Image 1: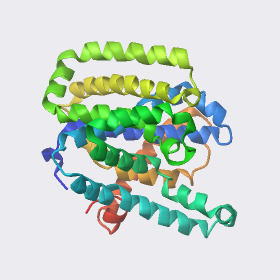
Image 2: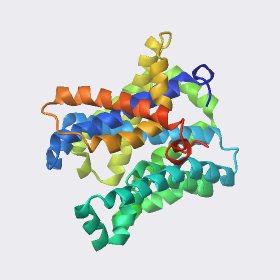
Image 3: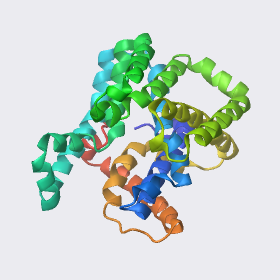
Image 4: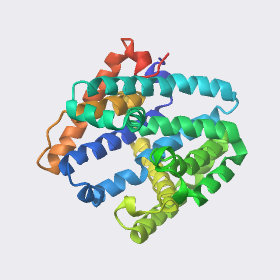
Length: 316
């Protein structure tokens, strides 16, 4: 692994913020166990879910675009190690865990195909990201045409895979960032030259979409989720960059470490959160989310010293 000082700091800083948003969003779910309607009608959930995964997807697309000289075979091999190996490891652990839960095991045995699907898609983001990289790698400039075709027939697509894994919804965001990554120098230059204009336009767009679509994102059609994902991701990218500019000269190595550990945190915190009791108020959830973030990051560093570095983190 590269030393902290040898890496660009802002991408890790951005990922640290985003992975905390993921942890916070899942932690808030503890307040609404058994009442998901209230969960999705929570304004903070609307804020978090507007951008956290779309911006994560965009970051991956941007870096893939920046390394587009690599062959499809190289990309597929690298991402198989980085994404598919952890997916298989998680699926295996999930299957073993079923043996210790007779109720869940009975559900699995009643529908084994669906059960295997759920085991391999428990972390949909990894499956989605791998699929997006393959789609862009195969179709290249035709990706946007493929995306539009999928969007036109979206209501007729099977829920499993295309909808469940958010492939159609995230494809446009991923490809947009991928194209920017192919012109990385110019994209960054334009970003810094016009970031306040970009922020103003994207914030207005984000606000208008929420006003029109409502607070519950699950009620949005696919095309509107794409638009809110784009607008909110651009807004948050600029805002996080502005915060970074204010503190970049301070010692933020611990935040960079969290960003570097984002994949491990994403995987591990879900295991831990299932063991936790439901907190009584939002303040406790905020505290819990920070503790969960730190513990998951520490466990990720520990995993790097074991075989789990390859199996769970995909670091070969």
